[in-house]
Image 1 (cartoon, rainbow, N blue to C red):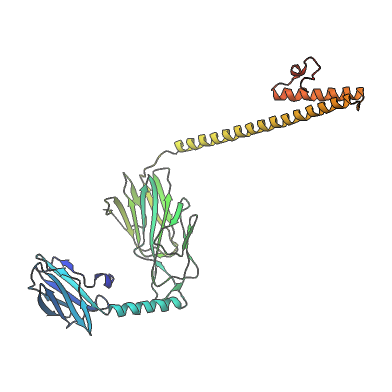
Image 2 (tube, rainbow, N blue to C red):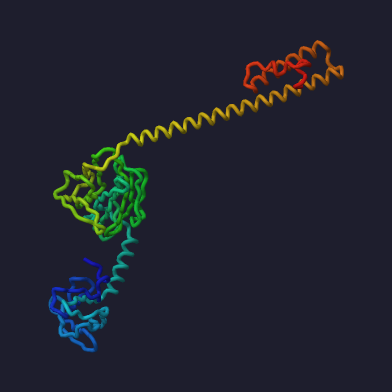
Amino acid sequence: MPDPSMIAGRALPAPELPDGVVSVRVVREAIGNDLPGQTVTVTAGGASASGTTGEDGRATISGLPVGAEATAEATVDGESLVSYAFEVPSSGGIRIILIAGMEEAAARKAAEETAAAAAPPLQGTVVLGGDSRVVMEFRDDELTVFYVLEIVNTARRRVDIGGPLVFDLPDEAQGATVLEGSTPNATVRDDRVTVTGPFAAGGTPLQIAYRLPHSTDTLTLTQPWPARLEQVLVMVQKLGGLQMSSPQFTEQDEARAGTGVPFMLGGGLALPEGEPLVVRLTGLPAHPQWPHRVALGLAGAVVVIAIWISWGTGRAAGATKRLASRRESLLGELVKLEEQRRAGRVDGGRYATRRQRLVADLERVYGELDGSSNAGPALSRPGGGEAPA
């Protein structure tokens, strides 16, 4: 039933009524609690007309000036009920409902909800209500799956089902997320969505989305449910020659969304807890995977080559730096040896041996720095190799 507060006192066009007729219904707290014997008055353009509600709670008033602004009112147990202003139509009629006791009903409901929230939860079960459905759409040629679910607790208090409600998504699911508007008790990790209890009386909303990649024109969705699914309803965006089938479908149809997008519909009876819903799609728009794999392979090769070059360059730079340091060290030792010879602190034999070894080491260092295995000519200048020193 619609929320009474959303329709109370609002004029609704009624083309089935005679022209200019206003039908006013008076109820208590909720639609269906009709109040017979209530006096209803409609005032339009300064003129008033009255009627009395019958057993169905309705009073029919006619003879009002067409096009005039009007209001309907009644008094129930001292409570004044007044409609929103409306215009008396020239074609068809108007229906209005006046609801008594809405404030008391709202206060009572709030008190009941507060008491239920404070009370310890009952041991019980939940189901996935009849408004639950699976929707599949294509976004950039990729299939996106939505679960629009209502977790229903039919008890008047919160229930504890003995643990969380766990939805294990298909292994191929990617990028699973819980959408805005879902219960804050829902969390997602990889391909698992967990909803912790206890569950409040009534419905708890849960909306899940994920991508389902495919490389061929055929795909099978298998989804088990952690609670009884009251009714199977699957909606798949129709694209090209796409076809949908399921062993759980008892009827299929097609329809268009408000945006004009065509959808295939499949419906069936309830599924027990744990029994998977199986939907097979054929004729999917599929793209060959080899260009993607080749691109990934080339990208990987480029990365490997870049790392190798970087490593080789870094290694060469390090080697050059070490050779330069060694060169400076050898030159320093050679200078120090010459100073010791001139000061007479080293004998001739030791000086000659030490100097020959230092010069030989320098030749090797210079050879490696110049990219040559023998740098002798660079040092074999007049003076016996003293020029570098």
